[in-house]
Image (tube, rainbow, N blue to C red; front, side):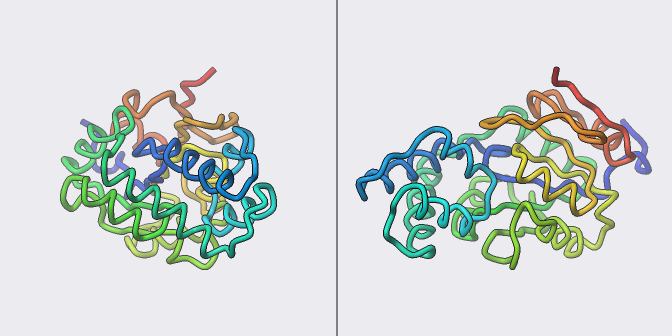
Length: 228
């Protein structure tokens, strides 16, 4: 086991696509909404929204899906549908529960940093092991969402730890951009959309490949890139 000095001060987790495979839920709800209003939704449109602030996604849907609803109405429809789907089944990503348990065993605090809103985060948290997340930052609790640094800076502030001693785990370019802008060493585990290599950016195929020791190395400034 790595010494305490080699451990991250905290791990800051994205939710959708990183901890749970909810992206198909979001995409299905987007298709339903757009098609109800006579529009056409493509895979390219769906991928463009991965990791976005929900308000940004709503504006995109207004423009590209010809949906004549307000931003808040679009968010409510999408969010309600995904909450129902997640309440029926929580599709954990491979390795997520094991890594969360390993962090808990070492006493390393975790934060949930998601652009989903509180209603969906609460549904997810009800399925997670008790006391897994010391801090929760959601898209409706920050003025500027990802790709801005605000969500990650807020999480580190609430935890009382330096952002640069944490590790963020993300699945999208939008989320990675947010974490890196906040000065948080970042591990990308791409899922629906690719995340390109970049200086200082760690990447892996799956959370099942990653250990607590690996996260400590990333927090200390080492780059671990397991992708081609």
